[in-house]
Amino acid sequence: MAIDRFVGSSYSQKLPSGSISWQSPSNIALVKYWGKYGEQLPMNSSISFTLKNSHTNTTMFFEPKSSSEFEFEVFLDGKRESSFEPKILKFFERIEKYIPFIRDYKFRIETSNSFPHSSGIASSASGMSALALCLVDMELQLRSTPDGSPSLSEADIQKASFLARLGSGSACRSLQGPIIVWGEHPEIEGSSNLYGTQYKFEVHEKFHNYQDTILLVDKGEKQVSSTVGHELMHDHPFAKQRFEQAGSNLSKLIPVLKNGDVSEFIKIVESEALSLHAMMMTSMPYFILMKPNTLEILNRIWAFREETGSKVCFTLDAGANVHVLYPEAEKESVLNFINTELSQFCKNNEFIVDEVGFGAVKK
Ligand code: PMV
Image (cartoon, rainbow, N blue to C red):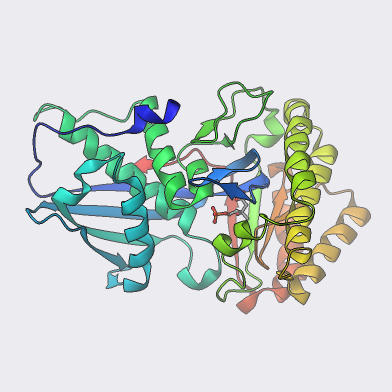
């Protein structure tokens, strides 16, 4: 099976104490992943823009040890963050068979985000991706000669994406850029449920430097965790239709990305965002993840488009924040619109100006 190639074998050497650092970005889905099966496998294919400015920096310090327990500590912005540790423990347990050396070292994982921790922006995608890269990089060092410091091959990045997925599904789309597909799609050769792959079809220049300004409407804890949200798709009355819709939206997006038809792009992307929220409104139990200010922003975006002919649009994750997407050519006018009309609906008027990026970098 395809998965076998990710299973780790034993290592002939042990590394002395050391550290590895990676910076990995967040990503924003255009066609959403919502619903999973088995070990973090997606019920439908999804596609995302990798972001540039919203990222996590992770330094993983390691030290050889002899006990067989997992041993690690997590630090956020220099302070011990034990609340992250259960999630990392679960991650380590899941990935152990693929990266068997993790019981042989004690780890100190130091992480910091370019966006405020309390911004309500999920750090799990960028965080799990950065950590998976550190681990695969370490595995590479374990296999290499002492003087060699090889860089990660395409196969290594695939393995890191495979591992990142086991930490947080959408994290597998954060390693590379600018556009990543995750989940098997009949029209996209090489697409896989196991890891993200770079979107290889032609992309119109309008989408090369697409802008994403993230409006921070609600900075609190998510009302529904992704785990619970994905779970709710299991007995969902519209699950089958939703999974089919995602596949067909991805099919529709292929020619749109090629020919630069931004009006069609808007229809697909906004419909995807609202469908994701509709799934949560029609599950049992049901949730409304938008806030009044979210709705206010969406209406203002529609009115602005109507009045000015702008090609600005929105997408949403499983929360109240709004990602405002627009072509780079409109940067000045849309940022002006955001400053004068939309920022009043954000907590402390805060938003993050971001754009399409190219993936993780070793530090
Ligand atoms: O990666 P998870 O399990 O937190 O799921 C996140 C899914 C969405 O962000 C809502 C959509 C997506 O495809 O990123």
